[in-house]
Image 1 (cartoon, rainbow, N blue to C red):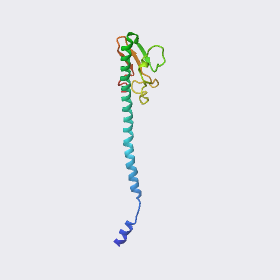
Image 2: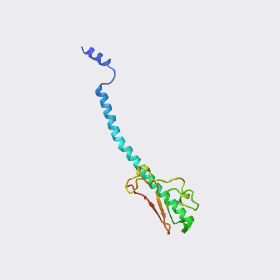
Image 3: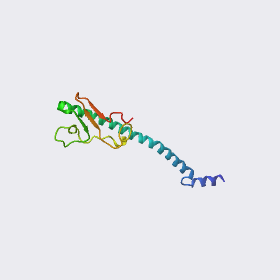
Image 4: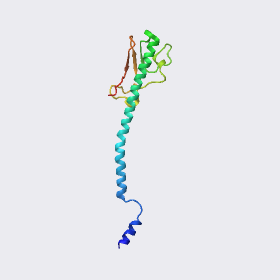
Length: 135
């Protein structure tokens, strides 16, 4: 009798429904854990990109002020690469925009993707939105 049961068990191939359901549940749990982590990584990358953009604009504004002197006092709002007189845009290589993932977060506006850079008479710069504006 035991020989027949052992022989019957050896001839069975495939998975039972319970085994398949356990695998589906495990995959579901792993996906539920992975999705929030992925979203957090994207948000962190956008925040780092924003902070790097602000530092790039500060550096470009410093060079612009150093080369242009008191004529460098201006407010810059986005790309101005085709102006007749020197502009901060001439010191940037391409567009510098607020990362799309941060639109509407913290003090960052919903629609305007551009930074506003104000170069003061003493050479200091005010950049909006600034570092940490997404908090």
